[in-house]
Amino acid sequence: MEAAMKEHHHEEQERSCDGNNSVNLFEYQPEEQSNAVFEEVEVEVANDSGSCAHVVGVDQVPSTVEIKHTADCKNFTGAGGDGIKNHGKAEVTLVTEEGKNIDNVVQVADVTRALHSTGLICDTKKEVLLTETEAVVVPAGTLSKFVGSLKRVATYKRKGGLYVAKMKIRKRVNPDKTAASPFGRQGNNR
Image (tube, rainbow, N blue to C red; front, side, top):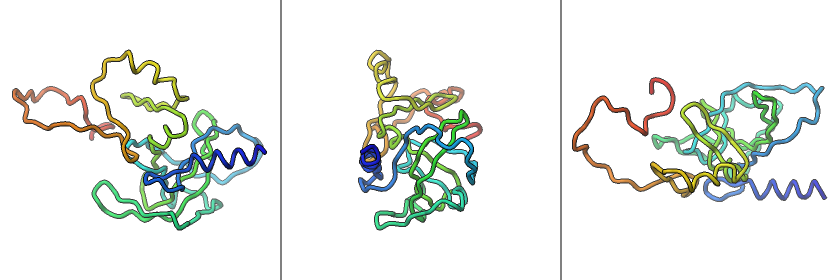
């Protein structure tokens, strides 16, 4: 019964940005085999609100992990419009720096950086707080209860796997060249 419930839960949570079953499982699992030896590849994963899937590069998956290419595996389109080959999906366990195990279904593609989709994380009853210094994943409701009492600078609604807002672009009336943009690029020197 428990295995059937876990499989049903797994099927409900796997969904790509276009609605096909293929990409998402982001659930904490307790470590079951503390003395087992596993092949591991260490990667730096970026939490990306523009990504519609959890994605890793071909060289970022241990050789013992099976990459399954199914009919619903579609290639991706990069930010510049270029095609990105999708080699299939892989079921993996991620181990955080804090030692927590997270079962994850990732798309294995021709990418140079591993990405976690903010939207897919939120689809698993989690919330993501992005700050100047970090992104934190917490259980659903943890952040939502405070949002109503906060002064909002901007709101981006979820649409097709992305968080988007309609805005008008105008020339500044009195441009201040020394003022920093409240919406600058992430990271140092970008």
